[in-house]
Length: 183
Image (tube, rainbow, N blue to C red; front, side):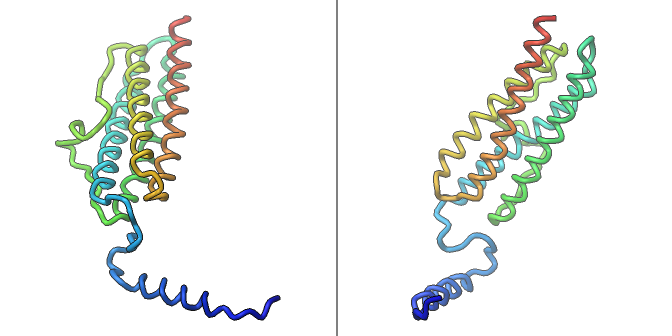
């Protein structure tokens, strides 16, 4: 063990503490947060709207699934709906953590969403519409991650985790669609 003086470390710690004491009401948003917070909050609320629209569409599809493949496909719809709800909760929590307000307003949900709410007339239509929405979400999340760069690693990591699940959903749906086309 070295007997070196840690005066430099003490000075750094004092500076960090002094900076942390400023604007305590901002919680996790410290002075060194370098992303455009209003824009990040806008994008996160758009992602929240997208996830909520997907929850609703998947839920409808779950209840409306009919036909020879309906049980397996309906189970997939329900699982995806529940995962999308988890994404919505995580996005809302991050919005609040950044000092924003998660926008759950039903009257503007579809206008803020990147994905559309399309009911679908058949099981194949439902799977296709959900796959389209997942592909839209994948592109949206990639754009958001690119926008953030290294300016907000916490939000970027959250979005990367959601993106990975959206990619799994798209793969699942593409497989279901392929199986249905072969039948």
